[in-house]
Length: 329
Image 1 (cartoon, helix red, strand yellow):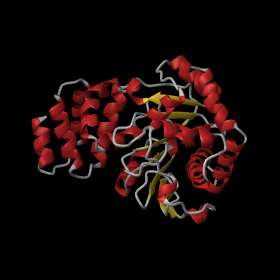
Image 2 (tube, rainbow, N blue to C red):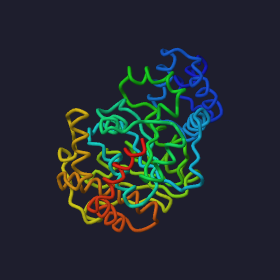
Image 3 (cartoon, one colour):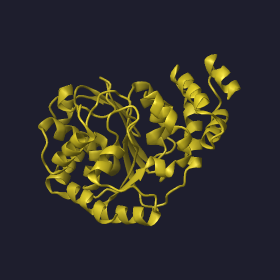
């Protein structure tokens, strides 16, 4: 670790194989919490390279058990977090709306580290029980069109990193790695990122590992389509930028999609929207993000995806996916 830290302090870019081996050692508990914190802090002081990110991703996927869903093509809807915007759980709710459109969703997520309420926090509050039992996961995907892959159950080696991340309470490279390390290797991915630079990193990586993908960054800093302004999308079809009006939705104000309360508040908003309620701003932001997932998976126009997302909610299908998930626990 000493040699690696010296290289990082000197501003050097690590080789892919070099950082791959280091991540494996971290996952084996070789280093102390102080050494891990020094490594993460040093990485935070500069931009991470594509090769470095690829090496870290390879190591994390090698360290975790792989999940095979018998060739079923699935989608993951996940964000990096770390945007500091304190929105309600938009990508998690969008995943259920996508599932309600009869699309198999393998949702990768975790508890909050650098934000108030993570995907796993709100799902747990709803009563979802996390498991890594492959038979249960397959049954959930079959019956509910969605299964939840709670990251700590699939990345047990990260127990050597979790205390340090929790103590640091700032975003680290593990925020970037989260959406990239789904253990079932979904063929389709919609990922939100907290800045444009990370968006381009994802763009380079996913071109070689995903059948179809969309990487989202709102130009005012959100790691999702916030509808508070223009958004940039990197996809297998190229790059584009659009405004809310371009997709037939009104512009939101930041306070309309923010949440400053407890996990219970996040749960209540989740249930309101999935049952057809919520404010126009809350519903529209979910429709936009779920619509992107549907359009990416089905290879259709975003406006068509948004229409199917609305149908998923209004028909009760999205809520039924949540109920069916409970029934398979």
